[in-house]
Image 1 (spheres, helix red, strand yellow):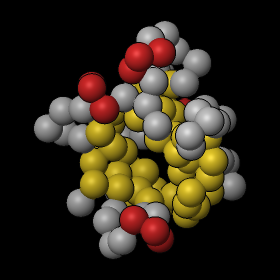
Image 2 (cartoon, rainbow, N blue to C red):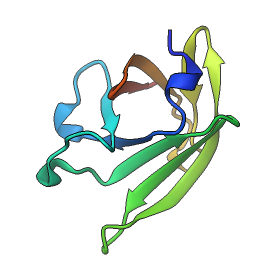
Image 3 (cartoon, helix red, strand yellow):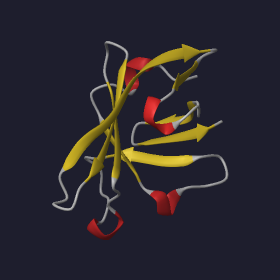
Length: 104
């Protein structure tokens, strides 16, 4: 189960080199992620239920590319981005510095 309070207020970065069969791995952006492994995709969850997706542009600054709302789905956080089609995302694993997110 993912406590929603533990994911808000943190910028989560996709570290695709860490992805596994269980899902995409996102790490706390404040963590020790080498520059060569810095991803191009970020997620931010807000206490008001908003989840925002960012991507870096040519100048390496993050720009918001999509926004949605997250919800508690049977003890797991789930969300769906409008620009990403009909895919549903769900946080399936959580630690203080790591999220695993699966797309269904």
